[in-house]
Amino acid sequence: MTAISEQEKKGMFWFIQGNIKILIICRLLWSLSTSIVYPYFSYYIEAIGGTKQDIGFISSIGILAGMFLYPVGGFLADKSGRVKLIGYSTVLYAFAHIPFIIANDWQTLALGQFLSQLLLFYMPAMNALSSDSLPPGVRGKGFAIMMAVPQAIRILAPVIGGRLIGYYQATSGLSEDLALIKAVKLAWTVAFGTGLVVAWLRLKYLTETIEEDESESYSWGDTLSVLKQSYASIVDSVKWMDRSLKTIVLIEVIAAFFVAMSAPFWSLYAKDIVGISIQEWGNVNLWSGVVALIFALPLGGAVDKWGPKKSVMAGMIVAPFIIFVFQYANGFWAVTGIITMIALCNKIMIPGFSTLIANMIPRERRGRLYSLLGERGVQISWGNFWGGGFLIFPPAALGAWVGGQVYAYSPTLVWQITSVALFMSALMVQFLVHEPEKAQV
Image 1 (cartoon, rainbow, N blue to C red):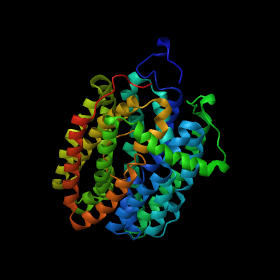
Image 2: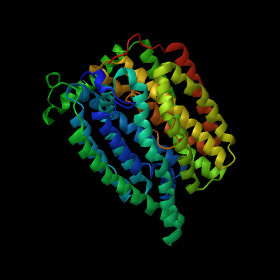
Image 3: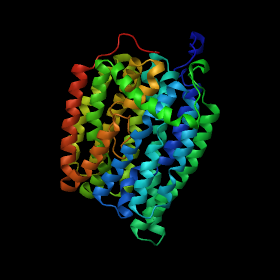
Image 4: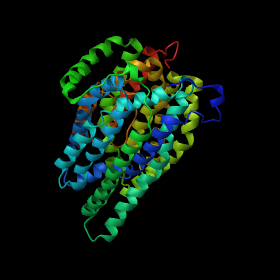
């Protein structure tokens, strides 16, 4: 990334150019298509014949699939460049949506979840490209905007999904479950087409941040060599980490297990225990999204002003108490208030963690390190768990499976356990994580 002159720093959002602009546009398109359907994925599994345990299993197998190729993605991102890996892998990821479209049983959904998460191995490259393309002084604001702009679309998308499901249930003459299945399959078809458009945009307009003389070329004949080097780099990367970064990894491992344990069951608890409808769940996401969008930029700016660690702590201290209260929610507005508070915690935690991690890792190691620990730190999900890195996937996969068993035994126990675990994680951040003296560019 070339140095930015003072003349180029015009306006509040001067850094939204080049790669950052294209990445935001692509995330906007993805958000519009996937957020219509993802909040209802657990309902889809149930409608097609899955049990609570099957929901946990599908979430688990998807998370576990993600770990296999993440080291390869991180290795190639550092050694051969970011852009081609991102673009061509996006094509494969788009085609992985086909099982969701043709599914007639929960096993096919499990296959789709496995394939789609397996083919997200380009995420370390995209995270590295984002960090490369944001100057250190505005990373908190930059990461916040990259989250907030797509969030503007995610606000409306779940409402569209809920209305689409409601329309089919009211007019198709099918049972509620069959109407839901038909509506969701249509939404997945749109997501598939959107994925191909996003792949084209990434290949055509993204600019490489690894210099050509620093990169290496690989062919299919090098597959075994790349796999061997990729997995060998895990040990090297772990050895390279300092104490603070290793502590962040440990915190992510703990948080991943317990967040994944609860993530697929927020919507089910709201419907089955609290009593809100599928359409109301879409409205929950609408209201929480609006509030989170309003505060996204101020909270991102707070990261640059307060420092990333203080910002992380602001979210991590509040979140456990909000999660604990969810078991006592007694109506639509209670659920909306709780999800809104969780969204606000994410809006300051994620830019805080992203900035803290980016500041610790030099550019030439970002792909490999992001493949191990991700770049978001701790994120509280109330739908699908979004994985972080190779070291995060196994505990998250186990947590998702355990969550299905715990929820079937006692729905309220899920929130009690998750809240305690996240509070302990917050204490670890406070006492064991230290910011670097100088941020990496």
